Image 1 (cartoon, rainbow, N blue to C red):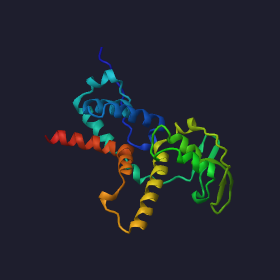
Image 2: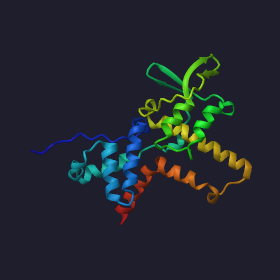
Image 3: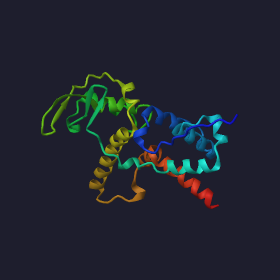
Image 4: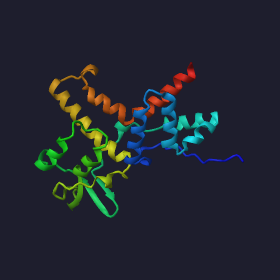
Length: 217
């Protein structure tokens, strides 16, 4: 008997949690030299298709799904969200980075780079803490950093929030470099930033582009 599978392609970073994103990145990294495997991973993670059913997807459906996946918004266009409500608690972004406590700064600095990897949930747990006070003018205070992390809380937060925070720091770093060097050419962009950009969203666009090139050939 022919089985019908309902497929819904995710087309917005708001639909993808950090845990799902990390799973996808880990799998793709393991098969990055095998385009066919990468294609299958994308369909499995972002369209919910069981691996064993992927060969049975029709050519027409496959084409439609590829088109859907290419509609992802660029992660660098995401804005930093100062307030995030998780459950019944509102969390606020560190309101003054220049006055961040030494403990918070030291705990973030122990990581080699700021990128969305296995340590990212810990960084978010440091930067976002419960709002302690907030006035009508938008000024607010968050709870004092105690060193206690709740990283599992951030695994279910969607990627639009995570990308907004990540690119806030990357853009800040680039702005500081521009002010220091007066001009910043493509060749002067640090390699680690290029890597972060590649791993944090361009993958979707590259996937789409690679399929377009294959189609042209």
